[in-house]
Structure formats: C-alpha cells, structure tokens
Length: 278
Image (cartoon, rainbow, N blue to C red):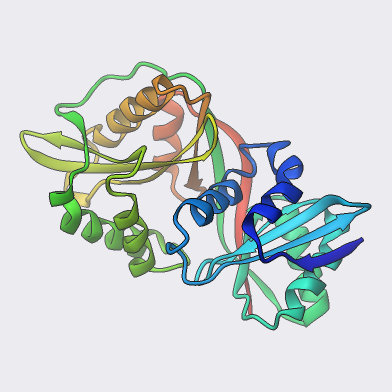
C-alpha cells in the first residue's frame, strides 16, 4: 500500500473515481467538493488531496479545503498509508468528517500515529429519496432565491450556523450560501404573502444525485409546516430535473428535522460523524 499527495484534481478524480462512484450517495460530499474545485477554482483558498493505492487501485482517499475538516473515504487497510501521506505535508488537520465506521477507523489511525485525542463533535444521518410522499401544503409557495435576497440569505446562514454549531462557523457558511446564489440548482425560498419564511439549498454531487441543504426556518416562522412544504416541493422539482435521487444530512440530536424529512419520503441511508482531533 502506498500513500501520496495528488496535486492535480483531474488526476485525483481519475484515480479515485471507481472507489467514489461505487457508492455515489455515500461519497456525495467528496464528489461535490471535487466538482466545485474543478468548476470554481477560486471557491476554496486551499485544497489538498491524498490517495492510498494498492497495485494501482485506490483503496482510500482524503480531501481537505481549509477551514473545513478532512473528508475521508475508502477501506481501513489504506488508512495507515493515507495518514502517513497527510502528515508528511505538515498541515494543521483539525478533524475528520465521514461515514461510520470508516471515519472512526481513520480517527483511530490518526490518533495512534500522532498521539492526538479525538472528540465526536456531531453525529449525523444521511437520508435519501427517489420519490416524494404527498404532504399537506402550508400557506405560501416556493420561489427561486434572487440577488436582492442576498443580505437575508447571509443573515439566515449565520443564524443557522450559530444554532446548529456547524464546525466551520457562521462566516464560512454565509460565504458558501453566497456562492450558491444564482447557481444551478442553487437556493429556493418558501414565501408567504411576499415574506420569505424558509430557505433550502441544493448542489449536484455527481450526475443524477442532488444533495439538499441547508434547510433553515427562523424561529418566528417555525411549527407552521413551511419547511416540510419547501423540502417536499424542492425535492419534487429536483427529481423532475432528471435527478435520480436526492440526499440530505440531519443532526441526530435534532428530532424535528429527522421527522420532517421522513414525512416527505426520505429514508435513512447511512450514519456519519464529525470528529475533532484535540
């Protein structure tokens, strides 16, 4: 097994594609990050890519776009080589995000090699849907976010980050939301009598797979069915745009969001975690 840094993103994609596309949903985040690096090179200030290969085939890989944590995928037998390659670059690695059990196995390898302790910051669940279950529709309607919504979207992004404790912080999420405005599929709002009440976004991670999120409703507009209606309408539209499947992540500590998504047809797919190195 050999671990190495890869500087060219297209070379990295070519060498990891079979591994990542073997389970597009499970690897939707790294696939989405690769797509962003290729299509919008200025989106991230830095980007780092590593691979562990056995006889020319990728066994595991990792990506990091600071300040975001490391993303890891693949088999545990490649993690020792992957850890060695990452450490050789001398970068500050604050933690790792990925699916269970591989994220926990990688964290254990990292801890053994560095002496760092680990702390699980967040437990998440990925849900997926290929059809929408009909729900009672709340007052209002969905519309695409516009440029004049930008100040509100950034305000809501900061509020969402502060409330949920996303590891990268409010400003990074606000920048991410800003970059999606006008993109395809981009951002939508649920609007009631001209007043936006709920936000939802989406991005395409690989052909035919859309990842929905974030979804945010300000406290004063909650418990009125707006988020449920928006997620149902948005998912339906994405599936009508030739998406084969939609996926989204929830915080397992938030029972409300988990119930909302299941009500509109999302079903549990896999569990994931954000682990800090301390």
